[in-house]
Image 1: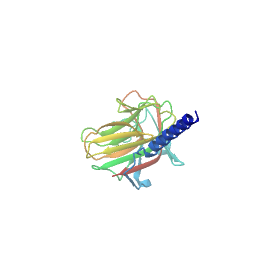
Image 2: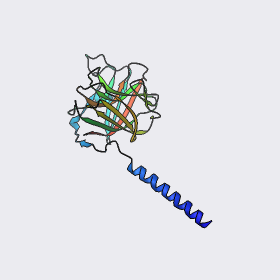
Image 3: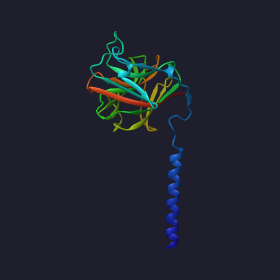
Length: 217
């Protein structure tokens, strides 16, 4: 009986060790990438053209707080696009190679029908990637489901764009959630914040972002 009990304890210990090793060896999305230095100059704000910035954006304790209303004007008087308050990563536009966006996002309950992250630029159309929140779920544009139950919690978002390979991969909290082909090469750059979808949008839209980083290979 003692020998059987000892064997059981040994077996459980080995299983626990194997599980621990698997957890430790799990690849992080940033493995093999080099961080690109960012300064304040790399963060350009886009907001409704007729509203002061402080009425749609704040930055405190390392958190970018962005909000917009469905009735707001576009970011430029000559634009026919939907309302937005977004961080545009500038000075790091790319057209080749492998690039990665990382940021921790937060979307409050009630915000819906809004793009919270995107890659602008493509050989066909205006964007390579749109990630939208609908009723707490993240979707690729308004279609494929990427992640669920994201309201009222911080989530880590990583987007890898292999331009030469024509591939996009999206990670939530370190786990691969979605992969698809891109829209072809172009003048490409990352954005995050709130940008109203063409339809089915909430009146008030908000997201928060912190620890934004850019990586490349």
